[in-house]
Image 1 (spheres, chains in turn green, orange):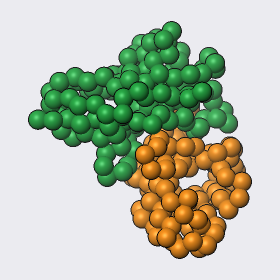
Image 2 (tube, chains in turn yellow, brown):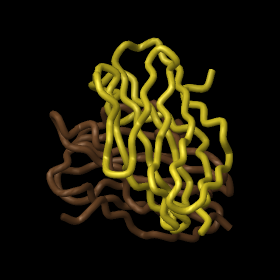
Image 3 (cartoon, chains in turn orange, brown):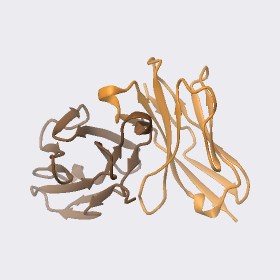
Length: 117
Length: 115
């Protein structure tokens, strides 16, 4: 089974509007972390936001927020007030446990976001 | 602070040659990870290293691939006798310890093309 599923290959949003990128995950480990990364056309991977499985509140970082619904195993990324520079591929990722698996992230296949004027 | 530094950004190798990719983690980071991104796919974990130790290499192909993170100098991902299927983007990432370990920063990637 896929650890991370991103069902939206592409999304379009108008500048200044909000957009939600979907992510569902599959794990039986009670301790896990969820990450979102942005990959613009230049190729680098940019860390956006992190949510721990025991965190009580949804994570927020500037215009990014993570809508964490534990029972549904979903970790959707919400981008408010979209900007043209937000056009990129967005990846959801999960880490299970810690220790020796600290850096083993499972990535989804990504969602290509296009922001239009 | 300088981010995760990878070089070269682009590398072309003929089949059968060796490829060496280098990664310097962010200052103060002691954990290094290597990932591979094949075209149209997400990243796949390869290996997790700390100084002079391989912690988790569960994602490394059993042959031709090796990684090290010596006491001094950058981490190296080495691919011997490259084949066309090794063409991919290779990303290095690093993290700190304690409360900061949840923030895993990636470098800009090294694009390997095997011709």
